Length: 402
Image 1: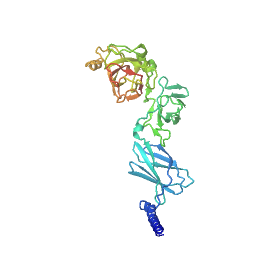
Image 2: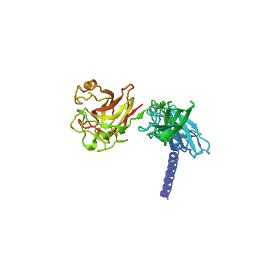
Image 3: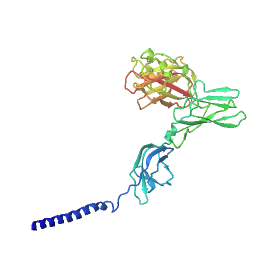
Image 4: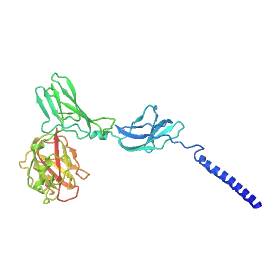
């Protein structure tokens, strides 16, 4: 009997100990949560960034949580922020424009808050590009077609444009009517020609193009200045180009890779044999020469497209001359006296070009003002991306004048 009573007392004491021990553990979380249950309001969903001119628009699906009263957006490692009040529950999409940014890639963190100050789990959107003057400076007005930039008739003029190569919005055109008044027309991005009725012959036509960097952009970017028919960069007609072979000009790898491949209309890097490919008999620096078919004044721009793999020029010179009489140089392109001889024979150095990439992508350079009229072009390749001592490869060259 005594043994049974001792067992009952022991079990009762253990139950009391366990009760108090468990009760204490169950309440321990309060000291970590300030005596309250932690609450996470509903978070923003499906965040979309729409870039603009030194600003960005962020939009997201409004949280269905009725306790959400406001949102906070942070960027620059939480050094900058913006707050906005949650809209009425009938509004399904929340959006805000963040101004006064720099041209940079941003990351944004968004929180939702309730009235008590509880915040949601963070929602991040990364690699948001903001655009500005650097992007704007890269834009050019649409180019007129080389062969037939315009057609005049008794009742007006039709302008023929090349297709835009970026996300073009439109091109604004100002021109003079026969009665002397100024009129405005708009060329859409999907149109390559526009007719200007009652155009007054001999007057200038001005135009300026606009673009967006991406389709979701909230701002339209305009080229800084109007171009005109008297000042526009018109592609030089490559249908007139002809290859030449002057003394010490580099040869070609095969008949399939002749100089004529430089003007066959490539718009992107191409591969063998649809390229100019030099032979391996003339070490770098070496040069080649071609005839543009007629004298060209006011050269304004040059573009080179390299091969899709290798031996692309990364440093080269563009020389020009109007007449080949007495102009044929006798020194090889790698001779120390070649530049002096070329200059003495009337060749003009139009531009020295250096690029730091692999030389394959289309690469445009602008010629300085005041160049002489030229017909014959000589390109002297100094170095190529592969480091090869003999080979140079090119997919296409193009010129513009104004």
